[in-house]
Length: 397
Ligand code: APR
Ligand code: PHB
Image (cartoon, rainbow, N blue to C red):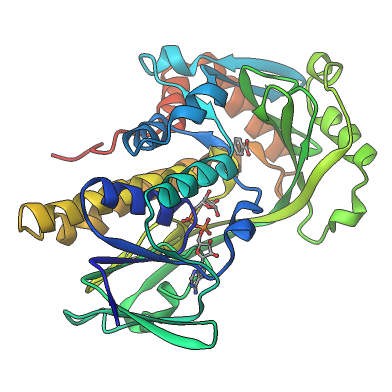
């Protein structure tokens, strides 16, 4: 039986970042991942990092490529009623920014750091089970190469995403789940063309539905349009996508969109989801294992980072200071931040998207709120401070 201090389930951003934070603090950890590393890297996901996230990446020594290739954004732009308005995020938050850097690249950097430090990661682990986490001798069991393996540990970190085994292993009576499913999806494309707005993420509310203009690099664009939940990727030719995107932007920006063949095209549903609590004895949930946000506010990856910042701090306090204070307060601290990010993501999604009942009146009310927002310094500041990420100790006394 292998032994470690913290067994981490999942080698996505949460698990990998937690592994590096623990390693830096001298805490042994093993990651057990269901897929191959290539499969994990093949997932096209988020791309906007809060300063808390970029600070954590630098803290664990994986900020070099981020600093060289990431694109810092000082503002965002809102398009509605055919006009575009800039929100000076940097100015409204006393100098905070967000950085465009693909989750794939962040994951690649964390994987390279982990293997560079020769830290143990079990890929292609099948039938993972989390055992005895409500006692003081938790174990992880998995199968690989026809053998059954067990890991004895002090703690289990459930970083295994929305469809993982950790949350699913908790007895129904010990967990409360809150969920809201939105009546539309996002059709996203990647294309190796220069982004129409290299210095700001653009969010568009139009009568035809939501659109978003983002980027992965100065030569790679990331675009989304809201689409019906029952749409299929094959319903959307490249030409149909580019035409629809331009219809949802203001005329000046639409005229500047550089089109080209898409290299990735997918449709994702939108949901808000929170599981409470996030701690079960000696098992802790982090990232998508515990919560999901609609991508509108770009919070998913950043909440995963703040969860593991809190969790790594709790483990460090346990081993170094011999106190369980951080462990005991982990769930409450995370959930205070999670719910504020859930609120912001829900609010921005509700403001920017066309809902089945968003008829004439609903559209006019959305446009009125947007017109109020772009002309109100206080509401713009509220948007900006949530967009860059609230401080980790926000509201704590
Ligand atoms: N056993 C082992 N590993 C598992 C299991 C299991 N039973 N189930 C899932 N996993 C792995 C998945 O293969 C995945 O690599 O756990 C990992 C979870 O990674 P993510 O789903 O990316 O979740 P997280 O690390 O919390 O990152 C959140 O990823 O999904 C995006 O939008 C989300 O940007 C956010 C970020
Ligand atoms: C992205 O670049 O994928 C992205 C940017 C901003 C969002 C959501 C997604 O709000």
